[in-house]
Amino acid sequence: MQNNWLKAGASPGKEFFIPELCLPQALLVLVVLAELLVMVLVLVEPMHPNFDWVRLALISLFVQWIVLLSAALLCGLRPWLARLPTGVAGTLCCLLVVGITMACTAVTDACELTGTASAVGIVERYIRYALIALIMSALLLRYFYLQSQWRKQQQAELRARLESLQARIQPHFLFNTLNSIASLVASDPVKAEQAVLDLSDLFRASLARPGNVVMWRDELELAKRYLSIEQYRLGERLQLEWAVSAIPEDLPIPQLTLQPLLENALIYGIAPRVEGGVVRVQADYERGEFVLCVSNPYEDVATRQTSNGTQQALVNIGARITALFGPHASLSVERRDGRHFTCLRYPCARLTQEARAI
Image (tube, rainbow, N blue to C red; front, side):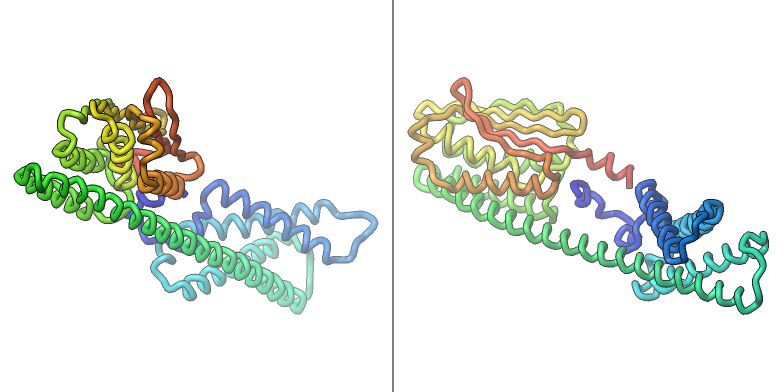
């Protein structure tokens, strides 16, 4: 579930309700289901003292050939079927399976594997096999369709959840930034005007790229615009140390992630201290895992006096990265050596790598 947001350019067939039946996992499931069907066909017949294992093997081979041939044909026709309406595509799939069943039955008759039978018996066998193929294929396709609808519902709920979390972060960011600008109006109108322009550019950059995930370089630029506004208010009290040069520019990161972390560091570690302090931003990307840490000096008194606003922002960030990147994503907060560390980590692939994989 964690790279779906990178596949905006995927082909329409990826949304088709029939999965990729050529994949090893799908083939394994089909083979197991086919063997279960064979067992059902054998058990419905009267039991004999001497069980015919050869007949069981022949029935299994017959059913497996039908399943594998159907999977190969549907896999090859999947891009074309995906362009059709769902009902039409499902009907054609059922007819294809029935057709393959009839063809395999004809081959067994030609090889005389089923023994001799009257014309009426042959017709009955063809009808029986066609009905079994139709019913089983219809049930399996119905299952695929329900699974597809469930996945779409899950994705819709995820998008709604992410949009809700994003809506909580943006007003919080806007209100705190406006407060910073308001503090400059009386003391330095020129800087206040420039801060307004920076805020305008910042929101223009934020809204220029719709969605919840952006490249690292865009998120970094967004955060630096925010810091330029805060620099007007805090002056030399705010010192920054960056250790992010090793991060690829196209690394995916949820939009408005770094800025709330920096805001948290400024409120907790810089604003309450007369002498200010150093905010360090460290990031690392190794073996497909991205780690981002923002640290600041902390004061116990400032911690007790700080509002819950930044805490809510951190909770939202943790929820967003978990929703986007899965259970291995995490956000941790700890204090050591007189500094407060807020770190997030999650597994991800670079956007250019994902583009080549599509």
